[in-house]
Amino acid sequence: MTKRVYLDKQSPSVFAAMSATAAEIRARADDAGLSRVTLELVNVRVSQINACAYCLDLHSRRALAAGETPQRLAVLPAWRETELFTDVERAALEIAEAVTLVAGPGRHLPDADYDRLRQSLTDDQLSLLIWAAIAINAFNRVSILSRHPVPPRGAHARDSRVET
Image (cartoon, rainbow, N blue to C red; front, side):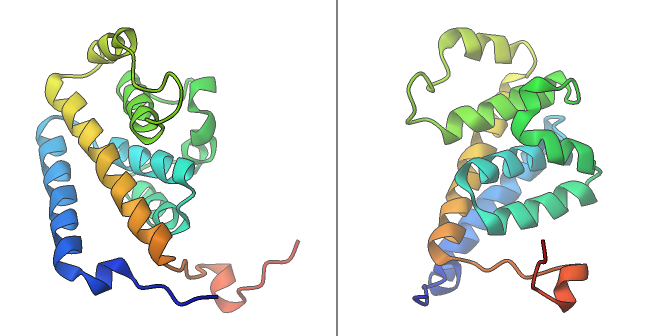
């Protein structure tokens, strides 16, 4: 496999600016009444769509540390099919998908959908969730194009071979 340039290491000041943006989003989200769990759900859902293994590993662990449950993480790709998520979380997940799938047909968050989301979110929450989805999409691209590795953890840390 070709050794990739780790974009975050090659251009650390650019990565630091991205990280500062993410920190500002988290701080403002807390001020706006958005929980860390909600932000991590956005991070995980966007990373699922983008198939970013590194960010999935990182943000799944952060979600669990923030109080998310394994059950809700397991059903996250099918969140619309469950009643496990609050109205705010459902709005956040809808925003995450709309921002990530912006190039798809009918994916530009039609006005009717946007108006419906505003019934569950304040303007600050709406804005910050869009920013959060934009930010994790950028981080996904850094990790995907750098091919950041995902180290084995837990039982697989001793033996990275997974038997089926």
